[in-house]
Amino acid sequence: MYMSFISYLISGLSLGSVYAIIALGYTMVYGIAKMLNFAHGDVIMIGAYVALMSMTQAGLSPVIGVLISVVVCTVLGVVIERVAYKPLRNAGSPLAVLITAIGVSYLLQNVALLIFGANAQSFPSAVKWSGITLAGGKLVISGVTIVTIVACVVIMAGLMLFIQKSKAGQAMRAVSEDKGAAQLMGINVNGTIALTFAIGSALAAIAGVLLCSAYPSLTPYTGAMPGIKAFVAAVFGGIGSIPGAFIGGILLGVIEILGRAYISSQMADAIVFAVLIIVLLVKPAGLLGKNIQEKV
Image: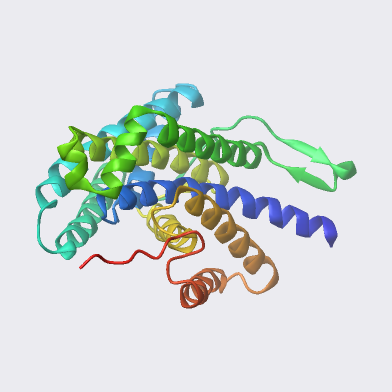
């Protein structure tokens, strides 16, 4: 009983780590460009397909596959931003950008359908290590789980350092505070926003590979639900806050797996969204979000 709870908890941390990595992409883009990139989930799916093709068709090692996937997604993210979002940056209505993002999402799904077909493909795990066995064989932690949790913590720490210490990170903070003032200070606002998209998309590629290594079936719609849940995680933790995305993702993964194990496997998604509604009723800005007073 006790062991199975620990085992569920670890699975929850692993799934939560994937959500957290994806949520970091949402949170950074929202914090800096003040827009929700709803095509983010589909970048995950493209990243997973690129890694799959590199590992199966081209026979490359998983590490190289992941690197190729990261490069492709980074380029894809910058292209999407340049073609679809940049022209709308000064559009009066935030709805214009939102609808475009949903359009880009459908475009990516259908391109994937055309290229890869609708059938689910089996994804070979990118982590070859079988993991560790504890408590005399009662608790087995898979290699994928350990790698996912470690990757999430490393990415999180790296991002925090990057944003606090590097010049580009300081430019990001400046743009997120006040675009106009940042531009007057000589910061390249467009370049900074493109960089944010590049980082978010690179993280999406890593998340895609980790997600498909743990749940090995891949279809053109694979990214949709994790994308929505990671968005929930970002809102849950406070959108625009990097530690918030991390905490939100981890909590969401744990709630989902424990809900699936102890309440009902059909209700797991509903439980996740119910928790979101409760959190937003109590703390409208999310766990670590700040209530921003609108300047009039």
